[in-house]
Amino acid sequence: MKAHFQQFAAYNRWANARLYEAALKLDDADYRRNVGAFFGSIHGTLNHLLVADRIWLKRLTGIGDHPEKLNAIMHEERRTLALARAEEDDRIVAYVASLDGAALAASLAYANTRGGQFTQKRSDILAHLFNHQTHHRGQAHTILSILTGEEPPPLDLMGLLRGAPAPDLRALAAAMPA
Image 1 (cartoon, rainbow, N blue to C red):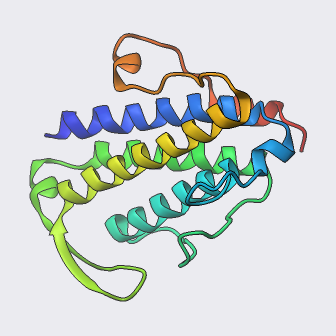
Image 2 (cartoon, rainbow, N blue to C red; image 1 turned 60 degrees about the horizontal axis):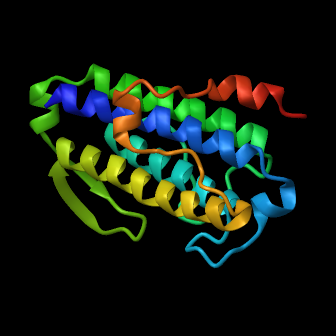
């Protein structure tokens, strides 16, 4: 089971880097354009993904800060958002690597953003975290299609498994104007 989640953590990092590479090429007006998606724009959607990951990792690890609102904009600037995404992806990879079978099977009690109390297996929480990422990356992928009129880079797991390259997200962010 651990290998499965390690693969998903690696996939998550890979897909995020590919998505960000395409999103960072947009001009600022398109990047922020509300196209009617749930979080409005690429900017809103990418911020939501970071917010949700930070919420779940705080529940899982007890470490980290996050806003309480799921539509919070954590970073207005694309450069800082991309750097924060790379850091969070590293954190997810490291967290999954730290787990053993007993930890994955163990239950965790937590409160959701509305104060509801829940207890679930850590493996189910991780499955949700990765599924949630895929869901909203799909929305961002659609937004890119709408804005560019072109097919964005494929984000399928098979791409990672077949060796499709992903950029270094930190290098992409560093190349952007501050």
